[in-house]
Amino acid sequence: MLSLVLKKIFGLFATLLGVALMTFILVRLVPGDPVMLLIGERGADPAVYLEMKQKLGLDQPLPKQFISYLKNISHGDLGESIVSHRPVIEEFSERFPATMELGLLALLWAVVLGIPLGIYCAVYRGKTFDQLMTSISLVGYSMPIFWWGLILIIIFSVKLGLTPVSGRINVLFEIPTWTGFYLLDTLQKSVIETDGFAPFKSALSHLILPALCMGTIPLAVITRMTRSALLEVLGEDYIRTAHAKGNSMRRVLWVHAFRNALIPIITILGLMLGSVVTGAILTENIFSWPGLGKWMVASVTARDYPVVQGGVLLIASIIVITNMLTDLVYIWANPKLQENNH
Amino acid sequence: MKNELIKNLINNLKSNKMGLISLIMIILFFIIAIFAPLIAPFDPTFIHENALRLAPGERFLLGTDDVGRDILSRLVYGGRLSLGIGLMVVIFTTVVGTLWGALCGYFQGSFDTFSMRLMDLILSLPSILLAMVVVAILGPGFLNAIIAVSIVAVPSFVRLTRAQVLVEKNKNYVVASKMFGASHLRLIFRVILPNCFSPLLVQATLNFSEGILNAAALGFLGLGAQAPTPEWGTMLADARGYIEQSPWMVTLPGLCILLTVLSFNIFGDVLRDALDPKLRGR
Image (cartoon, rainbow over all chains, first blue to last red):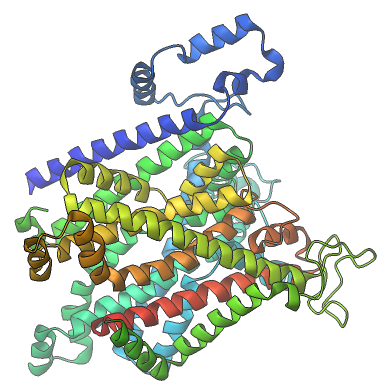
């Protein structure tokens, strides 16, 4: 087990190095001169140009540039945004909690609804409800969520007037930063003393629609996965044995079947982080949610390369690390894999 | 093999109404795309003055957009673009992915190891983020969006082909051909690859819908096709400002995307079942 974990961690570092190399190459593939991009056409005084080039280390050979890029990364220095002139890492950490809060809530409702739905479908396989849910989840799976978000806005915000259309909270409230999660920050003592629960309600009402939108595809995937994982387990011999021993349907389902079906479901959840990021990119742009997705799109549009580079590096690292943790949980829960030494 | 596939497919379609509907939809989409100039009542980029954001009615069946262009015509031509994108993505990923994957699986060695690490790396990024990075390098635009979406779809194809080739290449019939003196090229293209056909076909169908979806997403984010191109995602982006006053501008392009993607996904499922009956109902 230990050697396997060490192997995985070594692999992780190799992948992270690869990600760093990829983002390093990315900026160098951009047509045009990066120095010109930074100082702008007008500041093209030869002396300024040379100074900037030296400052950025662009007069060095490429391998040397890559090593100093790695050094900078290890210090947490990801460069500066061309647009705002602020460190990339600072901009990232401001927006990260917003995306996390949205993503967690989206996954939460997808899990809370998806797992029971999947179980119900598996138990009543082939019945009308199962067929209906299977069709609906297929629609959910194919959903262009950038359209779905707009439809949700038309229904809930425009027609019913239930939820706000954009942002994280009513701008009138001033919330001191604590966790960066507005649902928690608005419950701080100082906030409740001044405004009561109004800020919390405002944050929640801003959060519901984007989370609903972002959770749609994960919900469809989780329902489908739970159904098929449980169906597979229910077909096993030991389930028949459990039935034969006179266990109640409920006991067989929960004690014997569900726990074994949970392993693939957990794996899918871990691997779903990538699709959550995709969801964040699209959802945040629909609902003007000030998170990483909106930030990335804005920086691609503005050709703010240091931000694109740093943002991709950080997001990719998070995904790669989560995938490895999921792998480890999977191996830990599945002793068969430990022997095969994958 | 192919006859059996078609027989299975017809049997499956007979029992699976959704599958049949999806196939009819796909055929319909292609007919509309091919005969777009005959079907569309107007030029998709023609601006009808005094006809801004008209609700669906007699003259403009599905209404007009914010500058007075006929939405029906734009949707019809948009279908042409979307299916074109899908086709180009499928052709690109199939050619590049099959070749690359087959070489990796057949020869293995350090090229294979390097390629697989590279694919893992690319797959670790969400496809839309990677496509955005490609667009950041190449600049926004319709053609660049297609390139971006195609690049993003290659790794899964490479891995699938490689895995298939790895399984097939040690089977007896391949070893026999080798003993008869078949060259590497012949072994790869005439002996092994035809037997990897089924899973690759399913993957190609899925790549089609994913390509359309990703290209529309890029268009929606303003990084794909630019106005006045009647691309569905771009049309949605333009319509965002008029959610309250003109909801039909938002509803229709998205519905087109959903129906296309859904049809291809359902058909991909049916195809998979027909190719591998064991998987049915999963």
